[in-house]
Image: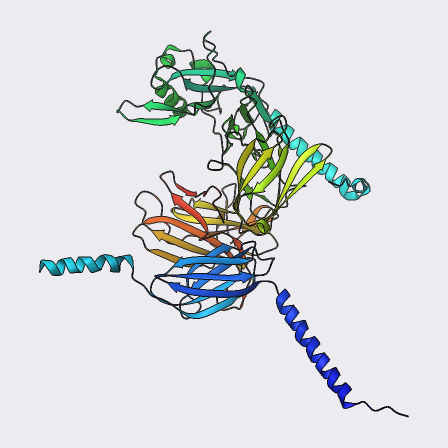
Length: 138
Length: 448
């Protein structure tokens, strides 16, 4: 007598397959080497680029571009700590930038667009009191 | 280290043996050739120095004989460096490296207090011999500064060509005719370390002379704030440190990288047949200036910064005002695989970053010939390409404060994949003119 497949078994197989695929990819993501996360914080005429990496990454490159994403403004490289973290503060003029981070030895590029830098330059600060002084003289 | 005796039955062994014979013959040629281009062939050189009474010191000399030419380091004990000119038995004080030089126009400045001097003429066209003039009234009546000036002006001083000095040694590369080190034998404090690679050099850049490459560094009296420095080649991933023969008297018990994450460098102790050697393996080219703390069996501590380089500044004969950077890379790659990121800081406070996409065509080889190519051989397993550093000027009137070079691989700002970086850390390899021409800025192993 031929046994029929019960619907409950079919559901179990589908769920098990889904869970297997899901956790496999999750574990794969966890094991993925290279840059794992990046964060960009704007300061007064600077930005701080930080993030985490896989174990094998010992240094990263940080490239700052104009909004077109291809005109290089500055490139810096930074070490990665034993806790797999990096952080670099870079001085910039006021403006909008694209920030890209990659493993020093090569790999996938992580990028963040529309990073806005504000603040007062030394010149602005010096100009303020000077202008005021001039005003007083008048 | 494992011995590879199977090697003896292989054809490569006989090729190796043949190669060794050829190399040995080359060294012997240099040592014994009476046609040595320097003319140095009688095995003697003078060491002259200023010492003692008088504001600029008195002038003394000592003849060092039986000096062997070629790559063998002649090790001369300091205790034998005694003035030959009288019975005063005046000895050279190795800690005395400068003297006050007084010129007739009233200028006074600190200058080096010693020189190695050719005993015979240093070439066929120069008739001056220190041997002949040292006791003449004309020479003896000169002041110490005038004597040093006379030796320089008459090409009688020996060019040391990058030999490394330490607190307890004075060395010379003998204008590529001989290698010589005067070391402090009395306090047993000349602590020489030999720097090399575990087996054979994978890369040997053409800016190193195969015979006169100086591989010993004196780390005595070094501190964390004042470490000794040694220049290695960047692409050589593993370097080897050991006590130089007949130098450091105690075994090294530990080597510790100080200013880098622990995963940046691996240090392995290899103790084989009583030879106490340490392998230092770098895991990224980013770590190009690491400071090491070295402890010996008597708990004495030394500090050494290993600089890893593969970029040299160059000047073209056809463009003496221009500044060029020569990069060295594996010979299975092409110049088109590399681009330079040049960051220039100007004296007015502004800065500029440029991407140098292609090298120049027309490189001067080590022999001075200009080759009509963008890349030429750069040494063993290496090529070299030169990039013109547009915007970089030199000299007192230059508007450039300093500049940085990073060498990137297959630069493409629009790609989502980076091929990585060949050389440079932080802002890049820094160069600056501090009054002695453009030179690489050594940070002394700052924290990374």
